Amino acid sequence: MLKLDSVEVTYKGAITALRGVSLAVLEKSIIGLFGVNGAGKTTTLKAISGLLKTEEGAVTKGTIEFENVRIEKERPENIVKMGIVQVMEGRRIFEQLSVADNLMAGAHLRSDRASVKTDLEVIYNDYFPALLHLRNQISGYLSGGEQQMLVIARALMARPRIMLLDEPSLGLAPLVVKNILEIIKRIRKEQQNSILLVEQNVKAGLSIVDYGYVLENGRTVLEGESRILEGNPSVREFYLHGAGEKGMNYRSASSYQKREPWLSRVRLV
Image 1 (tube, one colour):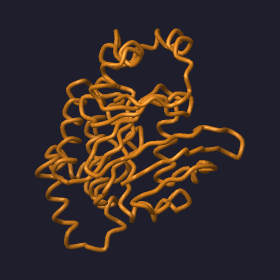
Image 2: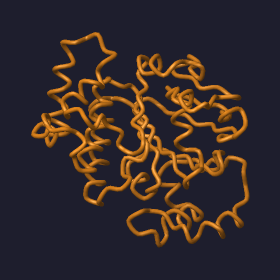
Image 3: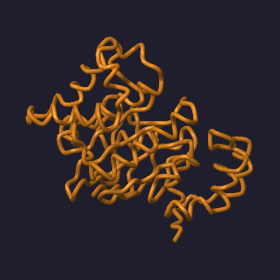
Image 4: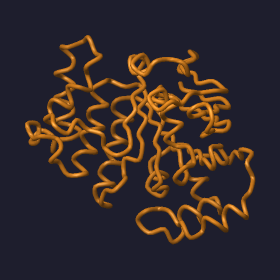
């Protein structure tokens, strides 16, 4: 459904952020993208959604295809119309608008206005009933968990075929994270769409993805089914062992990078 082949990204024509990232998102799948800060996860999502252009970034090598159509040079609004919607890190809501207005903003490119009301009812009644009671609330006053629900719900209002979720667990309490992840699984099952999930909380991410990729220094260095990645010794030591709720053991970073200097992609099967 979505395929990146040897994608290189450069900012301002000088700073290389991705160095040959390749990955695939199958139809009706949840794919994970893991790695530390600066590994290239968010840049990968922005390369897909076209948002690189807003930060003086560009895909300088490789290709990005959505259903066999190249999109790496498309404008962001055209990519949204195709059915690819990014939920950005940091719960970026329209803080001065109400919850209801934020949700309607997600549907601004749709022409099927009759169906918008139906989708809004699904959001309120099935996925995020908490938002129903907050629909007239100014969004800037919502809690972190409520704002995360809102940005995912707003993306759903665009009727995406692929959702790009960037750090949906960031800064949230464990119980809220669990609820958000359960909703993500339901969305995939009931909406029949695909999800590309970026997570630093690897333990949480591996619990819901079908397949995952690990990025290091802008390169894809590991890939495999979630259960196999979870059992990989390097993944367990660096991302899972002794990590607590965050799912990351930063103290192991130096020894990991010295011991695992490989830069070519390894496929775990």
